[in-house]
Image (tube, rainbow, N blue to C red):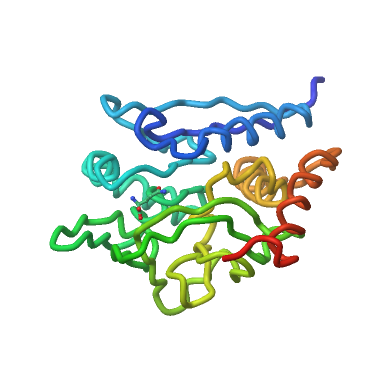
Amino acid sequence: MSAVVRSLNIVHLYPELLNLYGDGGNIITLTKRLEWRGLGACVAEVAISDTPTFADADIVFIGGGSDREQAIVCEHLLERRAELSSFVEDGGVLLAVCGGYQLLGHSYAMGDDVLEGLGLVDMETRRGAPRLIGNVAVESPVSPQPVVGYENHGGRTTLGEGVEPLGRVVFGHGNDGESGKEGCLYRNVLGTYVHGPLLPKNPGVADWLLSRALDRRCGDGSLDPLDDAVELAANKVMVDRLLSGEEKE
Ligand code: GLN
């Protein structure tokens, strides 16, 4: 009898519109980390002309983009809000970066224009000045190492009462440049401003997502360890640089 191969369905939303600062690299990291463990991955790229379905999804990914691209995408996604909400409430794993992260909340106010959000997470975003730009490091319960990367956003995100951040900013700006909070964690939703892309230098975050998705899919979220020497060296270069004071905020 052959062993059951654990495999995940990954839905990549609108890669042609939301792919700032190499966000698509997150998909490569997820699929490679499955492959290196002998696990399967099937990636469905959703274009703006497609109707996405989340019925058989394990991980949904939505990257960052400009305000203009966000508005296009949001209109389409709002039509699928109920299905996406069921996915989230059922424990589906959703990773959203920057522009995609902002869309998870109730609204994104851009001056007089207010973009209605998906309302999947109790949070809201307002555009402010100046833009919050630079490298970022975040201490987070989902990663043994600080989460490192790059942020560039005008939006300031405020989390609702009881919504956990991804973590605490130790370098950079995070959600609003003031609260010390970065990102959000809600059920198996991870929202963040961290580009770079996020996952290659933060293997702990990648495995947190994979473990949650595998647990939901087949009741076994265990993951064989990988040799992460290269990934952790890349992470350490940034952590050392940012926390040593070598780089100014
Ligand atoms: N348009 C959003 C902002 O500037 C998100 C930008 C991004 O995804 N980097 O706040």
